[in-house]
Image (cartoon, rainbow, N blue to C red; front, side, top):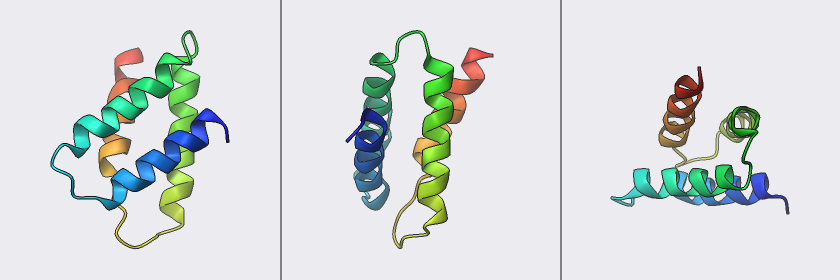
Length: 80
């Protein structure tokens, strides 16, 4: 399984939970993914954004991807 798919799996678990520190866990998971992608952060964020859109399109019950989307969107804005 590639790094992006591993991240999506982790974010899927977090999308289903009401863990109080979910925001920090999502940010940490995304940071770990990006640390492996030094120099290609924008491309990695865009690839992650697209993967999350595919996950949301599946419309599985009890998944909330807003935190992950907001984190990625914020990071993309900082790059411009």
